[in-house]
Image (cartoon, rainbow, N blue to C red; front, side):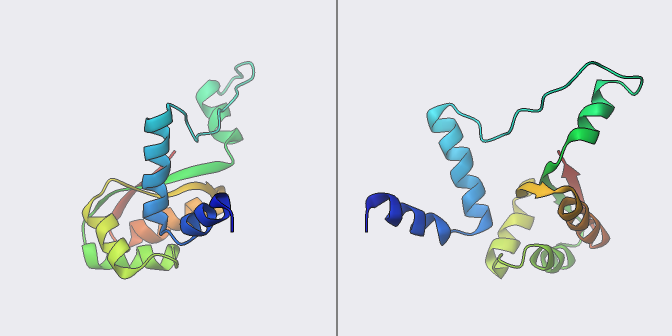
Length: 125
């Protein structure tokens, strides 16, 4: 097994929160960004902000805060089934926390709805 394959296996075993931390560490260490640049065409009547939001297909879901931690932990484990109980608890306690880096529009909306129903404040960007 090559070093690349070993590294790939190791990364594959990380939790979603650990992956987000790894991405952030790589961005800081090497001065790069994992974000996809959003291109904007000529402004329309709705303005550039409306057009950019309409064209966006991937969203970063961020848990900002949790009013009822237990309900939010349960909801978080529901929307991110690969998250362990301890990782979900850590995410809620250390809010603001990125829950998903590149969620589709429908997945991001579902996550936001479930978490807000449980008493969390969620931001999509």
